Amino acid sequence: MGVRSADDTRAYRAALAVGLPTAAYGVSFGALATVGAGLDIWQTMILSLVMFTGGSQFALVGVLASGGLSAWPSAVASAALLGSRNAVYAIRMSPVIGRGFLRRAAAAHLTIDESTAVSSAQGSLRAQRIGFWATGLVVYVGWNLTTLLGAVIGDLLGDVSAYGLDAAAAAAFLGLLWPRLAKLQAQAVAVAAGFVAAILTPVLMPGLPVLVAALVAVVIGATNWLGSGQRTSGNRTGEKS
Amino acid sequence: MTAWHIVLLASIICFGLKSLGYLVPARLIERPTPARMVDLLTVALLAALISLQTFAQGQQLQLDARVPAVLVAAVLFALRVPFIVVVVAAAAVAAGIRALS
Image 1 (spheres, each protein chain N blue to C red):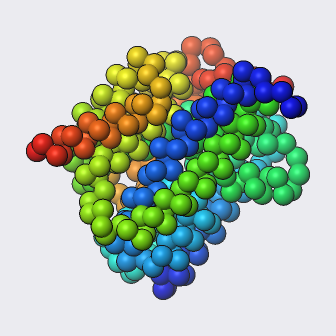
Image 2: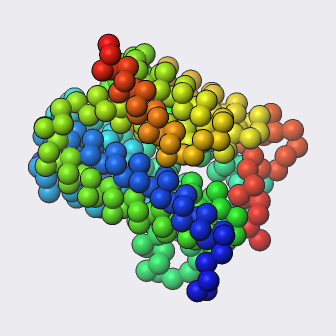
Image 3: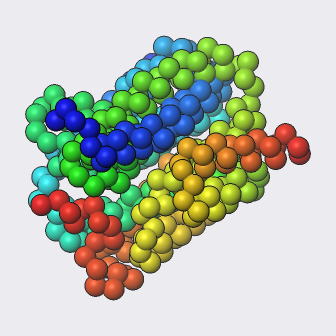
């Protein structure tokens, strides 16, 4: 401890590079929640402080914005379905986080796309821990500040997609996916899952297309189709010992 | 259901889902098949999110400025351009096309 290695520095840099643009997107969440869905500032802030998982937050206020409060079953179900991937991330992060009830409870709260992705991309266990906590905290603090900003000045900004923030979010997810596409099996899953999610969007309740797309991974993972004898598609689960 | 009920219910469910994963014994997912499924699940979920973020507008599919922006992002990622630069470039492409059209 004390002296920072090159590994540590790399983890901190990745945390900032991933965390800051993600956090900036909170402005559009704050605006959509207040202007679009009609929530007050406190309700909007509770979502960012307590729910704290962007996809689910957008899904919830997106459904409420189009369907009103009576669409709550669909809104809550969409948030839950999108949030279910965090359970998968938690399984992945569990050995990285280590023991201790409070530490694991805090880690659970910060278990999101970005913290998991940055952590998984690091080499040593120490760097994986730095990646997880640094990214989680950068996004948590930043996301809540920008949510507040968006909730307060949202109607001044007008349509936030004019600033290209929706494309920025897609690009950020693409950046998280990119390093995982080294193998043919992962590429096939990505293409199939993206296709399935898109074609089911007009047909199914919001949130469900993502879950059906996830079944692609379960089926290909279980049968190891296109796996050509490899044991796992990535190097992350294989390396813990 | 008031807006407060909906907000609190959904928040508690989402935190519960995060906690759930930390209760799964590690040895269960370290065997090859579950480990492969967990890996591919991450890939599938991210790909589905990209697809929706790029093509979906509510429950409609819509081709707009997001598509060229994401294509530009893919090219830049392939060229190993840093993450933050790519994200800003994608936003700029989409914003630029919308400003001009």
